[in-house]
Image 1 (tube, helix red, strand yellow):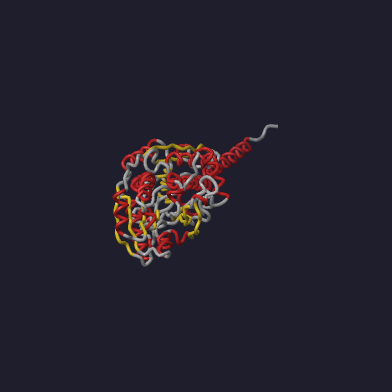
Image 2: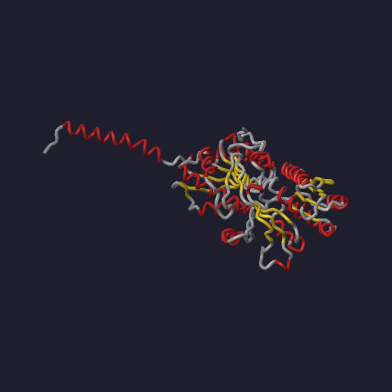
Length: 411
């Protein structure tokens, strides 16, 4: 039987009404991913003095994070590009600008070296993308230079100074001499280190600065030796750190004075060997053999890289995972929305248990005070550290109340 015309009209109106209602609902739930993909850029030092600390290992860590996430977020592909900044801030800034403008990069990671980090985080601010600083330490990143697009995930000058200085001062280290890398990062660690020395009731008797990538530390070590300071603080990383320790051992500085390494990490210890590095006290954001979670990631990393990961590598893996979870939860890769979600959500993985990203972009989490083992104490490959203490997050990092970051609302 043929239906009356008004029934068809009514059915059509109902259909149109339902469709009209359905469109906004679908639009609200559809993922908002720019360019149909999420892309990470690892901007690192591939062949220079910090390439062991960051470099190819950083690229691998990023790839592992993407693979472990399934290679997709919200059904769209995720990938990684990389480049060598050659320790040149202008090259790093140009690469970041090109990545953001033409290569659809959503977030840049690594940024070993403080001048590099300061340059790129400003580009990220201008382009409204995100920068993760995993490999630089100047406290300026979350103080006067801070911005809403940057997260600082690893150590900084403050974390490497106060707890370390306090521990050594309590062991009788009441006079200090500093051998410092002459760049923004070195200056920042030296400034905080000297302030920490004074806060501990000790005194600074002298200091000397060296240029990046120095092959010969003889004159700096001799100055430290002649100062007769009880403690010599070395602020160097990568090959500079290795070269410095060779001179320290050659002149026997470590036999008469205590040497502390404020920005030396496990790759340098590995390069030096336990015979040369034994007894050093340092702070670490990550140690591969700390617990079952760190071992599980590190052994997979070692199987592909033939070296254990350090804090930069582990921090990059953690940063990408946290970012992708934020995109998944928020349904978008828009920078402000992702940053808001990342700050709302605790960072709880093998890298940081109960970590959180503060208003100033500083990610805070527990650090470890460690001492390099003697050769006889090491029971297996890469068994380098004795963990002396866990430094709670609230003690390891500068209190928010002392931050000069313009994003902090002051009462």
